[in-house]
Image (cartoon, rainbow, N blue to C red; front, side, top):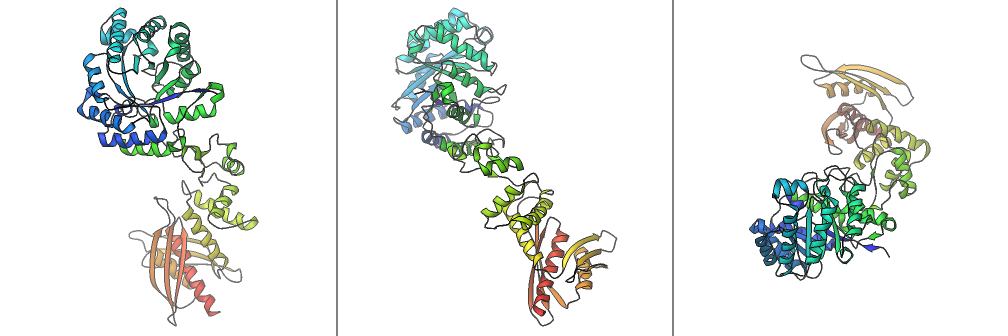
Length: 506
């Protein structure tokens, strides 16, 4: 059995410190409920002394969590901070006070202006003071990633003797390299008396894009708790992303000797909830929860995934709540992806039929970033219309503008395979196209309706034109045509209506 790694979520505390991501108490409660569904071990609910709102959030989350999770409140190494945290946690069934102090030369010299001995004295006092209120006291050694190894070991040993149950080793500025941070944790595991009797936690930031790697290096070298946030939310470049470290441990549990009890199927829901409440959008290529995390647009990748998912996916999307892989149809997609999507829509094409439709698909895909299901429906319908057609459109070109007279050149293939090209002019470019078509088809009709609709969203959407023509006898025929060019769509629609009229007359 691998080691159980506790997941300490700080979305509601450190995550909220991300500029623009502040949350009110009700919003924090909504997220806290989702964290409980995720089955996190610890919820850091806030920094009670910082504001009445944070105090109230910690108090209400304490009541909400019950026995399901530890509820933690942050403090500085200041008595009044600890008093406030204890008061906010008084209804918690599993309370934890999280107190600490800066331990790097930079923090001691420039921020706190204290000596190493004074630092240790303050750290020990804070832990001892918090211990009067709660049994579970976590100590953070702020900026441990830039501290002296030997001094850090002295601080950690002193707070363990003072009663700390959890020691948090943060890389507060995201400065470390993974191997160096791992070596720091190993040094503490080898040189601090009593460290095997407490939980060793890591809290890493993403300033150099390595928060996940830093946290896993900590676990590999002895840490048994990871502090993280949903979506990697947090100050500056953010914190370790919960979804990343949890899924990494699921993939490499034996190598890391680690597992968690997180309900990973709640990740997508949690990600979208936090994004919605904070207004902090998740980048499309974000690991695990990004929109493209399980999407494939390369034809080679699509073919592999369709044959066997794990050829290009190491995680089953269902494990994180996505449902299934997404095959994104683009100009890089191949026959296999198109055939698969068509089958999902209820169409079966093989051989030459599939080849012809694929060529039509490529024409659309070259003009659009992505081809949607509605586009495929339009293409299938267009192919069906062309196969039943008496006259087919071979080409159309228009010339118009102020003060030019709109003109159109149209080429049609007739029922005997003969090709004719004519030119005409009209009140507008579509009128000119229709007059040119009339010259070739030569069937009496009256255009009674013309309508245009976008098949899909976006400026590059296919346009579908619907026309109604009335024959000399009063019968009405509907024609439709779809294309990325509205002139071409219009020509196809009109020709489709005329083909129906001619078919009735035959």
